[in-house]
Length: 260
Image (cartoon, rainbow, N blue to C red):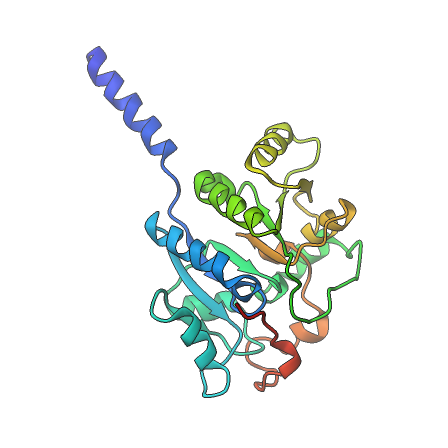
């Protein structure tokens, strides 16, 4: 029969494991994500490495003499860079380089994963068809961070990011794939508020996160989460050209960035 001390050690070990943050594998987009505020994301990269998380730059640029050097100069050798190329799903490109990403940071989340037709139908048509124009970011950016798949895995890490973002004049919205009346919703709202988020929105399991943000009067510029294919659907014309079937030349209007 186990002693009291043995039982205590088992319980303590279980609680300690639960308290440990999940090791993240982060895919950070370059244009209009990292470049929305390079100093902020330099800090983010340093913190991620310090906390034992894996991070790679995942970009739709090609690794050539035109599009590659700027990324390499900015990132240096701090983390790997995955050059996916235009019209390639980012998760496919990342897996091809040995990166199993579980957290994405991207301003164009609809080009990360090929959402199944069944899943897309379940989500239904978008509430809004508005899309922000492709242009250089203003000095103030709104970041949308998912709660259950992202913040919950390492709250201290994302609390640090929110504080740093706010100190630089940006806003952070927390979004959830739970329904607004879910039993966990009050806790999510309270935790998001305590972390300094300017708002919390609930998309539900089959709702587009971008729609939920618009209904809450938030225009999110950069999204952070595990299931970014649930932010908004890929335009049908683009989806037909993915997997490397579309043009490989990157339109200069597609790339725009903010210098330090």
